[in-house]
Image 1 (cartoon, rainbow, N blue to C red):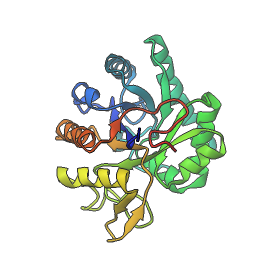
Image 2: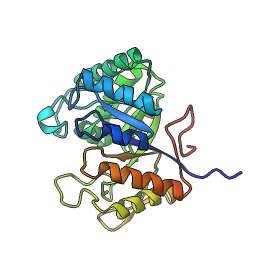
Image 3: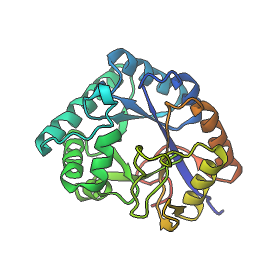
Amino acid sequence: MTIGPVIDLNCDLGEGAGHDEALMPLITSANIACGAHAGDEGVMRATVRLALRHGVAIGAHPGFADREHFGRRELRLAPGEIVALVRAQVERLRAIAKEEGAVVTYVKPHGALYNLAAREATVADAIAEAVTGLDTSLWLYGLAGGILLEAGRARGLRVAAEVFADRTYRANGSLTSRDRPDALIKDEARAVTQVLRMIREGRVRTIDGVDLEILADTVCLHGDGPHAVAFAGALRAALIQAGVAVRALDGDVLPGGR
């Protein structure tokens, strides 16, 4: 029997957008804010319980402690400070999850921390060090083609290459800066088409007009937009109709069999 493509759908939750309950049944992995850029213990606990109810994998979503800018402003911290920052946030969510009878299975940095880790080796290695020091069985999510994946592999972690449904790409593989008007894809059909092509063909058309090779193990859905729920439903339906299985990371095998 031929096995078709498989993809994980992850979403940033516990950030106060108000869509968590509606989004949870549509995704397979929940990136839960750990109280730094957003969230608090009560929100974290409620989101963990919601994920448990729907059988959704739980991931820690640590970011810079900069609520004013939602963790999207780049802060220059020493590697040791980044290790401590990530470790404290992941430990906090792991403790809450344990109390609720759940397990945190992966770590995905947030916002500016995520983008820095995709291109700067010192930041990437600090994050990988923090995760390895906590639990080597944790998955590490990072931008497809980014340095964070290399740092995770170098430390023996299982890594997942992440692509974005509603973001545009540059020719160097980076996401288009949110400062630019073409950073976000607002047309639902265009976003769905981009995701399907990344999964089936391993390519994405960049804003520079070139096709870029890309590996997709997990797709990020942003949960803070006004149409987040409708888009999540449309994307999941389109994936299933296209013969793409939707499920969380499973055991020692990546969704794409890589």
